[in-house]
Amino acid sequence: MSEVQNISCGGNYSLAVTSHGKVFEWGGLWGNNPQQIKSLKDLQVNQISCGSSHSLVVTERKDGVYMWSHTPNLGTPKLIPSLEGMKVSKVGCTETTALIITEDRIIWELNWEKISQLLLVLC
Image 1 (spheres, rainbow, N blue to C red):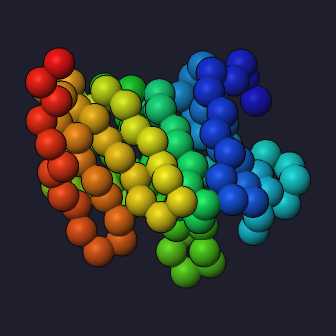
Image 2 (image 1 turned 90 degrees about the horizontal axis):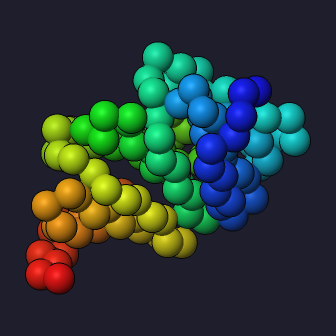
């Protein structure tokens, strides 16, 4: 694994993103040896965040957000189409949801049922 740029810890698993934009996971279903997430191998990722059983990553160009659950049947990262092309500044996961802040200061909340615009930050 090349130099680790960022790390995030979830319920019983962890993610790391390298200086080359590759994402590795370990713990939980994957055991204790870091393994590259193969479905993200062709992307350059610069942000990661873990919730208790879900994760988010943002592409290097900040225009693609991928989310997935850490359960056997939902374990493949999926692009969130309604956020495609939006310039993402920051992502963060809570126990059951995720928050995304775009460069135009709009905050989005995601869960498995919906994506909602929360508010426009004026400061």
